[in-house]
Image (cartoon, rainbow, N blue to C red; front, side):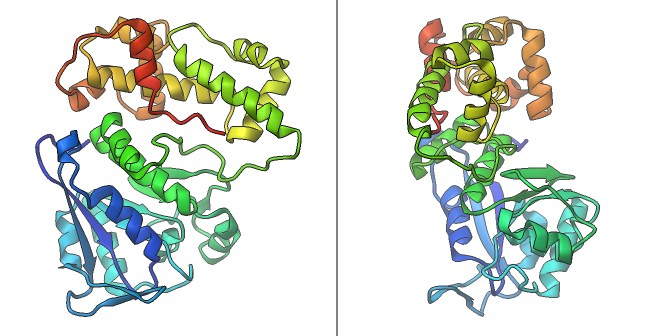
Length: 346
């Protein structure tokens, strides 16, 4: 977690062959001033081997680094964009700078084919990593020491993050904001980008949608998810949701995973954790009440799920990310507000 009241420094690593889209995503997430909306101050720098030679990007664009690779030593987070050609060799100074940064304990993240750059540096040897689903076998073939995860949006291993394709890069960037500065900051950034603020890393990269029957099922499942988000404080079960959809639990689970890329139970627990995060940030409600309104039933259960998903406790999360306490809302409004920035996937 980032130190409070200090500008958070982000380094984008630039060299010939990086994708313009990923550069734009990083710039949009950390390069805009949103301090007037409660988002911490960010200092985003584009780093390269020198600051005098423009780096060509596809589409006739160029990028001129404003800092050399030495600036990576000051960064809190280093982001490596994806590549137009995933086998593009990175300059040795870039690879060496990434190795030294990881050795210092700096968080390093790669978007899409940027995993190949980290693999070239040897940073993924013996570690779990993900890339675009269409590149999984290529990554395995060229870097056999990497444990390639076949299907996820983003994962972390030893403070190294990798992400799947285009949209998953946005998901990872928002997750890194959430990890460093809390769910509310990530939701604010997502709102300004008009994108979904919360997709878990374990969600499937893509969803095979059969047709045409799913249109009816999708409507039913979307209604069930909306109902669940508005009633998280109630003791909902997967069986309850299946009944509301008019399906058997087994059929409901099958259709739900086909529609969302995750299981009903995991989705429900993720929404409860997200709701609890916002209540901890926005209110001074006691822990048992936060747990009740998020639907965990008890503080012990909430603590267990925070440990499993966020590697922290609710009390530590509140201490790190609490904002100015607002009056405690009613149960219904608190639950709806806490769940309100979560996407109702369709």
